[in-house]
Image (cartoon, rainbow, N blue to C red):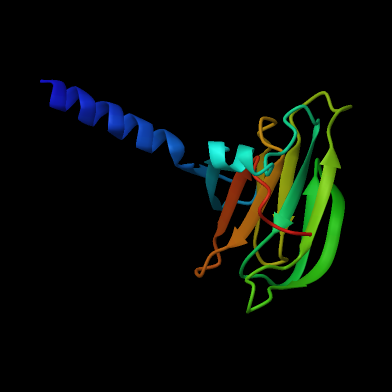
Length: 152
């Protein structure tokens, strides 16, 4: 009996350390988005990689598999409009933009468009860093995080 209780405790502890994934429908773009929520662990806190949770802003980082014109919007306002090419060695783009929502009354809506495809989702204000990836099949992964791992 104690062995089963121990196994349940271990399973719960291990699963709570991982990022949580959900597939959600884009608000107006008609695409599905793989949304991930990454919690900061003790190691990230120890190394000082955790974003300030009191900030009323977020930063969007563009990571892998970009090759073309990208527009970033918050609440239908264009804040980012550049050609992005992912570095094949580092798998990063070094491109990002930020938004301060301290004066907003409603939850901000982030929209990213490549001209051919887009997604738009509500921001989770509990997270200050948003990592955006393209997938091999031209889908989207959006990771809400409080851990700094993309360098500017």
